[in-house]
Length: 327
View (cartoon, rainbow, N blue to C red):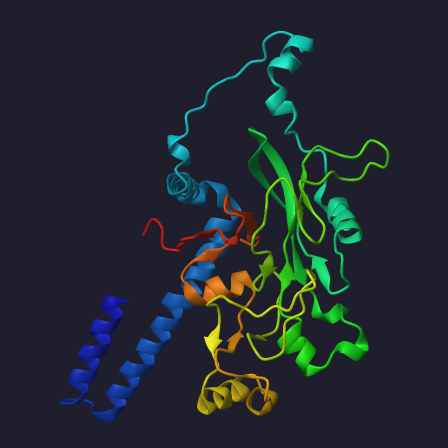
C-alpha cells in the first residue's frame, strides 16, 4: 500500500508538468483500483484458496498465541497443579472431624427458596424478594453459609386505588430489611426454611438497626423523601428519611429542573415538598454504580450485607477489562 500511494503521488506530481488532468485522473483511478484489490479482493482470495482448505494449520500459530495471552491475562499460567488423591473410606470419625464443612453444604436451591421467601416473609403486598444471594456469617461462634434476600419495594403490587402520585412518590418509598436462612437447615415438620433473620418487626440472630431500603436491585422509579407526608413504614410509626441520599429539592429552579427531567409537573406543584426534602433517583444499584464508574464492568448480581452494627449495605462486584491485551 505504501508503494501504491508513492506511485500515485508521483503520477499526480508528473501530471502537473506533462499530462494535465488526463494523467491525474488515470493515476487516481489506478490508485483506487489497486486499493480495492489490495484491501478487498486479495484478502478474500487468500482466505478462500489458502486458509480455508488448511485453516487449523495456517492459523495454529495465532491460536497458540491467543491461548497463551489469555492464560497470562487471567494469570492461569501461574497456577500450580497439585494432585489430591482420596485417602481411606468415609466413616463416622471422618464425618465428625469435618462437621464444619458438612454443615455448610448447601441444601436449598435458590428458586424454590425464593418462592418460599415470597410466601412466608413478604409481609405486605407491596414487598417482594427479587433475588437470593449466598454469603457467610459468623453465628454463635461458627462460620455458617447462609442464603439471604432483601425485602424490596414493589410499587406495582399496590392496590389500584392506592396508585396515586402521593403514595407512589412520597409515601411508599422504601423496602424493609432482609430475610436470612441457613443453607442447609429446614423445619422437620413442614420442610420450610429455618430463619436466622425474619418477620416484621425484624427478629433473629443479627439485629438490624436501620432496615429501610431505599436502593436495591429493582428498577425503582424516583422517590421524594423527607416531605411533609410521612412515609409508609411497616413498623407502624411515622417515618421521615434521615439520611443524605438523593438531591435536595430546595428552591423553585431545582424543582422546575427535575419536573422537566422526569416529565412530572407534580414535582413543581406539590405543596408537600418542603425544606429538607430530597429526590432519589438511579436507585438500582447496578445503574447507580455504572453512572459513577462507567469504565468498570459490572457483575450482574449485587448483594446485600448486614454488618456488625446492624446496618444494611449493598456490595457491587466490578472489574476492569480491556480488549487491547496483549497489544
